[in-house]
Image (cartoon, rainbow, N blue to C red; front, side):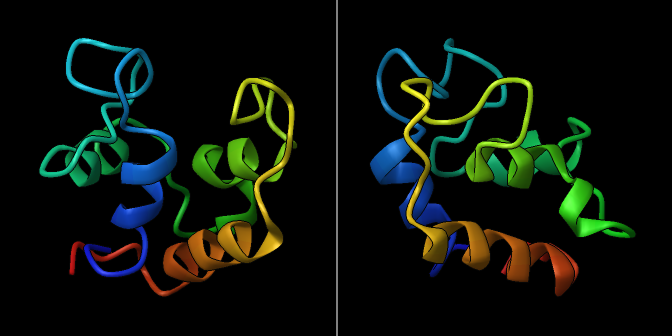
Length: 91
């Protein structure tokens, strides 16, 4: 998480006015992101492709992220999906 996924959140999500402390849930700022998504119902370990987090990033959820509707590069989608498939560990 900290080496591969958190940098994505730092650069694209956990910024001022978005998914940061005091911002839009989940809080994806460093040090808060894992607990926010793991305990907030954003992950589905049993069916990773149905995880809210993945659906947002893939542009398939009710609210695609980023909000402009521009999909993230597929490597980010696949990186997050692989992390969820591996158990979404806080490592």
